[in-house]
Amino acid sequence: MTFVTSRTIPYLHLPCKKIVAQLATRCYPSCMPRKDPEAIDGRTGRTMRSRQALCDAFLALVLEGNLRPAADEIAEKAGLSRRSLFHHFKDLADLYDAAYELGMQRAAPLLKEIPPSASAGERVAMLVETRCTFLEVTLPFHWELTARALVGPAQKQARQSALRRMNQWNHDIETIFAGDLNHLPAKERREVLQAIGVAISSPTWGYLRTSVGMSARAARSSVNRTVRGILSDAGVDMSEAP
Image (cartoon, rainbow, N blue to C red):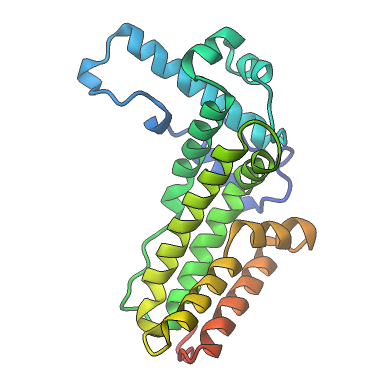
């Protein structure tokens, strides 16, 4: 099943459309019972396939623009019954979390490792390139998570998921730039890292792409300028930047 087309998500630029189409067909077992493949019997296999189908159906609906699909819509898309949905997931919040994590994992290969030996400018360029591609691909999931965090019975779980993602994001940024900011007092260093986190976050990317209406290239350039400016203001030598 391929989820993304130019019709369903018009704001994705062409390379990202191809990336999502490829990633959407890859099977990740994050929302499945964790079993040794050799120990999976027929019933467990059917359970895993049903859970996979429900997660895939949810992701397909989100990518079509339905940010809060109902149980009946998900079940119909998966070719299963509503009863089956609630047999495999305790509630919609449980399904939403599993599907969201699945979507994030499918896009995870886009987040390439950034070598610490590279100059600050090179690391900024690599960070912006890989993260902006990731943000472009996962933007529909960000909107879905935001919608859940604002309304509905799954508000608490959605906020917790967003907080986990943000904390991991900020930790990664700190790892990339911590050595460049050792000369700063702890409070100022934390403020600089938080500012970078905001500059390269899903809400910022969504604002640039959808509210401002920037192209992906222009939005990426804006993020790059912002991150470089933050680090330069903090006293980091950016002269070697490409």
